[in-house]
Amino acid sequence: MKLFFHGGGCGDSCCLRVQDLSVKIGSDQILSGVDLHVHCGQLVALIGPNGAGKSTFLKAILGQVDHDGVIAFSSPGQRDRRPRIGYVPQSPTFDPGDPVTVADLFACCMSKRPAFLGLSKAMRKTVLACLERVHGEDLIDQRVGTLSGGELQRVLLALALEPLPNILILDEPLSGVDVEGIGMLMDMLDEIRKTYDLSILMTTHYLSTLEKYADQVVLIDHTVLAQGTPSEVLSSLAFAQVFHRKGGV
Ligand code: ADP
Ligand code: MG
View 1 (cartoon, rainbow, N blue to C red):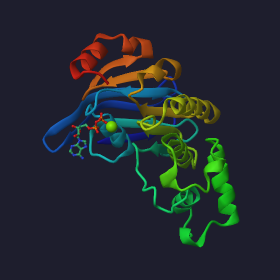
View 2 (spheres, helix red, strand yellow):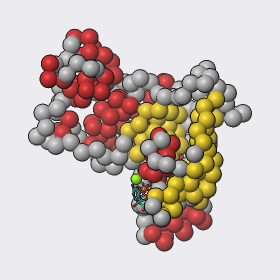
View 3 (cartoon, helix red, strand yellow):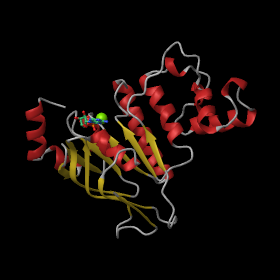
View 4 (cartoon, rainbow, N blue to C red):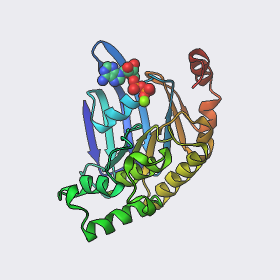
């Protein structure tokens, strides 16, 4: 595996460049020959059928699975420093009976003080500031297990934004979110991307959101089958073949 960090861009403010990436798990070739550029400030959507290797691809970028090929980051102004990656994993589940509150969750992730001692005033203020980024200050004392799908995603997003990353990676952030919540969450991601000038790479099955929000769409089924603007990919032969063959998204 080759992992590079460099201060300059790839000529066009490229934030993440993946070249000839492949992942083999046991004897299964999960991904091969994957090339992808994410330019700074872009929202890139990865689509593909279940089992296509989307989550595996994100995990390779995060360094959580072994891979071959090149993954190169560049973060302008941060020469030789690894860019910060914010990550929202796919649908974590929390027990509704679990007493852990949103405040506790933040405290566990951000502070060495044991959560059972309660939040210091300063930490509560910090958590509120984090939640403000996702318009979620009112969620601070809610139990994590009782949050709706959309609320949970907002809380996880707030966690991924602290400290502010250069790239935000989200795995199926819209699954488990109701129809109204989907528009709200996508508007929020769009706002966050513009406010904090970060790049977003996300997987999704909600193709109706692509035209409005994605700069680039990448269709994956073990390798990249199509890549381009939402309309280019959604009207491609590869898209029709994959989803016709697999019987839908
Ligand atoms: P997607 O996110 O597109 O649905 P995944 O990346 O989760 O696809 O999985 C792609 C393929 O890799 C699937 O066939 C899955 O069973 C396999 N896979 C993923 N992780 C592992 C693993 N840790 N061990 C064995 N097979 C795995
Ligand atoms: Mg997945």
